[in-house]
Length: 222
Image 1 (cartoon, rainbow, N blue to C red):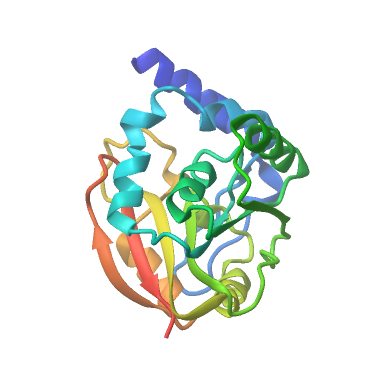
Image 2: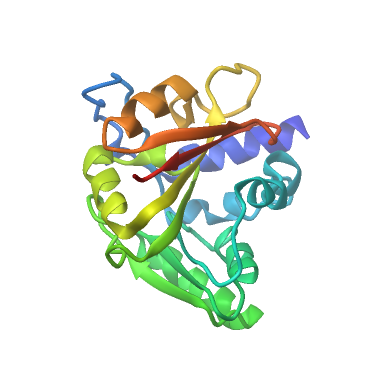
């Protein structure tokens, strides 16, 4: 298992887009991580992820209502998006957002193969997720927020996309735990997330510790 983890971390490091790694958040001082390129998509689908991240436990803790409209920002190859689609059901809708057309192409192929009809693909930019205004009940970011090169603007755009009372949920590897085998720039502390996200008009309503390695940070839009 250690060799597999080491190999996965090498793949992740090689796939990082270094051009976005130089920014520093003006409030927290946190240095932004690089974006994982589509070449690292296999890491998103690794078999160990089920044990390391417990996606169904995470979604149970978050709570996704049937018929709701949700978004997976930074959806990648769709590991969470397809699970969310099953939970919202035929009357619901998932907006699966990603920067990279290659990731969206992988996700489109997955949706077709698995017969998932209620997912809309959205190619965003570094400062706009391109989500419809005031229409989303829940936005989920799984190990994504720490990679934003324009986090303040992105938080504002996502707030505009949420309905009043809508939720923004971050899953982030725990920086407070040095034993979590992820590079430091790909972790976040609760204090960092709270400081940065609340500065853009959200309220941290709950921190859930159900997962083995990640925080579930649930913010609410007023």
